[in-house]
Length: 244
Ligand code: OAD
Image (cartoon, rainbow, N blue to C red; front, side, top):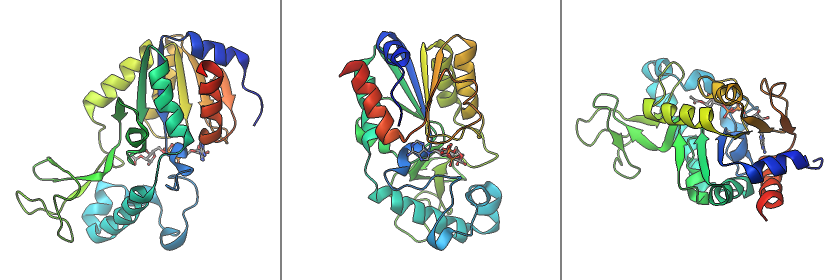
């Protein structure tokens, strides 16, 4: 990739409040498939957008369960990459840092990020749709997994299309976006709202917005800096240029 803009390195070094919003692209280098890139193998003919819905679960719970079991297996095998590690280091380097992720894979926490807002839930946890309580991995061994309290079939503890995001997480993310000096959008297509509105909230409040993505996105024309490259390559260079 091209050289890093010196103005961005300086802005990062001077920033007091930094927010990073991540999407599935940051985990691509860990082997977790993104949502909108072509799928491979068994699931090549399924559209994630048609499986990640309450309607799909109501129509064919077993299909949805199997698709999530496959994704969960990939996540369990995945390890954080250099991009996750760089964001964990950034958290330790700036006075205030908020990491907001749309990812459900827990890789930021594994990489050592202490404070992560999970906007779309976590795939390793399950939830009872009747009692709305979360069930940690290993607590329900049945197949299909059943709620240990009431016996209802469990669903993954993720946000599906058409469902509301956790209010507290969204409020924290929005507050952080509105008060930061520098906003990094990493590995997200920026197509799914309300997460996609966060960089615009930052822009409206005068923050510098930088994007890290090998492809152009709808945010690109508004971002002050568009770093075209992979998160696992660009982020470590950026963090070490600013703080190394
Ligand atoms: P997408 O699949 O929509 O977008 C992935 C983005 O990552 C694309 O813009 C790719 O160009 C980029 N990308 C690929 N490899 C990369 C790399 N190595 N480094 C940096 N970027 C890379 O995934 P999301 O934006 O995460 O929501 O999708 C947002 C939401 O839509 C997901 O959280 C999920 C999905 O439906 C729910 O399930 C509610």
